[in-house]
Length: 442
Image (cartoon, rainbow, N blue to C red):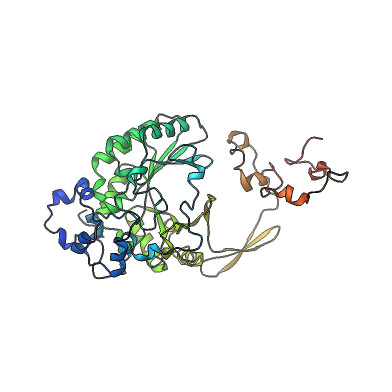
């Protein structure tokens, strides 16, 4: 862009590449860096990096010429370098590491489709990316051409969605959907748009960050035919925001596509409140709203990126109130075992009584809020709302009187103590005696 706040970079090794090639996303894909010999031409490798690159069974390495140009070749601790150049730290196991830490495959009714939440699904459409993040949560399949999804599996995904009317929101991910051939990507999106109950289509992509020249007018013209369509990118450090990324985001925004950012909290990369504040400020400059800040997953090879949860809470403490609310990520832990995203934040609610709450703000200012004593909740909208899928209403189900408790599996058997069914064990004792939604007919 003509008057961009951000700069462009091109490594000296690529100085003679004609702009026509440099700005062609297919050229970028076909000239990715992945061997020690290629790295040595662009950035000098450390011994730890060279050791990793020579190891067998290493998670795939590929870096676009554009993205490697953003690395300071003289800084072995460059925050972009740490995200994409492997080191031998990836070979160190750690407690609790898993192959599929989010249990996505457990919640997969058909290959490549993850139905974890009631009204939305994750649709994996490829295992390929423009470049490969060293902390990738799907490294079990991502980067492996033999694990990619076949046409009959796409058809199974579409058929599942057609017969599951509770799904209103589909997130395309992978791999990275924007590395697909344009015709294949459009075929997938158009098939989704033909399903009446799917309201929203989302794309999760790091292609605008790794290879912003992929965001062509041809791409945005195609995407805007299928609104409402949303797109989340993944920027972890301010150094990743360039004039080229700004231009790519501008094209997407002008096509009416709302943009969000999903960052991952990474030790030695962005585990600093000042870095995070600059990151969110630079994101909103390019009209990208911070969405999630993820605690690093327990995925094999990513142990050296992990921080204590307390570090994430400290960062939230330094953002909320200190800058605009729309510039603050929601800090989440994607729960191991498939529990989904759980928001974590500092405690702003200090105490409460039956008519008053005590709160504190970001400065430590403590205040009270008087609650209404004559409040009657509105029940009019209840019949209009869809009921949650059985088994997923959770705490809301308790609040709405569907159940009195949520019990761990095997709770009754454990507390029966292998006893007998005797005269004092009367199920009616656990039925509310009063009048209300929990009351059962006698």
